[in-house]
Length: 440
Ligand code: F6P
Ligand code: MG
View 1 (tube, rainbow, N blue to C red):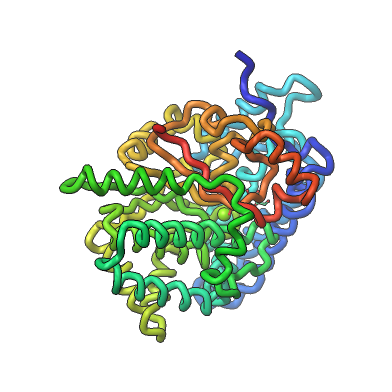
View 2: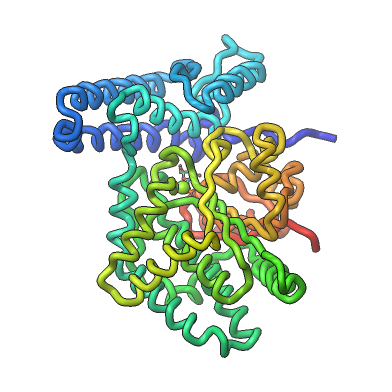
């Protein structure tokens, strides 16, 4: 049987991968450098001269990285000892072993896009941890927080909607509950439009009333397996009455998207469709806006401190869910490795085993989809199950807006029609999917 198709790569001049490596990634590096510059005074106040020196060092390491990238220098091993350093360096060796042409070196504009893009964020982290005492500094923190503040109106709308829904939850019939579930799933899907790496770190807050837009956005959902999610969770609720039903949410972006995910998670508990939610976040700053434990805790605190009654009520409830253990935040270095998810059972068997215990896993966002499918040149009609390439820890669903040139599981002709109508349909975040894999 033929192996999986080739990886997306910046080698394909003009592709989205190429444009990302050529333009977007250097722009993100420049913004990271700017962020260090802007916090110079603060770092001085905190750490004195030592802080200033560390800031300079981090800036020079990041500038060097930008130069390596722009001149397509070979990818180099990581040097700073950290929990995942050996795995990264082994992965580089593996990538080099795949190259038969030229000098056998992995390069930015030659190697798989997924690998080089992940490597760039890992190198940013390396620059920071090589610069104590500012080795805790998150160069993306400011933009993540800004995204949350700029989405305040939508946050108020969603929190008010949730509290109103919770107040009548007990009186909802099965059909009504199902419709509310679908609504909150769609809100969480469109929340994924707001990531900051697609916009090169520029603000991309949610400003319109998302609840009113849902009907208009429906035609943009290209694969909609939400009925299967409902049958799975509603049958768990009926059959597993006394025991726990765990939904795992593999988080993506902080800021507005995280609010939509927490709203969905709150609904799952309040409606008793789930009894426990496991959130998986990143251990290091990642793809600009991805959620770390600091972002997760910061956001809940902000929501709790809001002057708006229903927003703050949400914050109080969320804090409480964390306290009681109904919500658990978990992280694992695997999420910030370059590996496709089909390698998880080998590379991170503990994480795989943990995920196997979930009744359902929701994978938020585009990067997770790229890792689910290996970021490869699949035909649009390839079954999702096949593209997962053996990754089936538990029933799972990708909740993703499209921001990369990979999509599987479409109907024959659907991809071609979309290309004819909207040549950039794969990369603008305008289209979305709920793509499920699990028992029929
Ligand atoms: O380049 C755009 C991009 O960085 C993609 O590489 C990546 O898949 C996406 O943005 C991140 O999106 P998300 O936050 O939905 O994973
Ligand atoms: Mg992201």
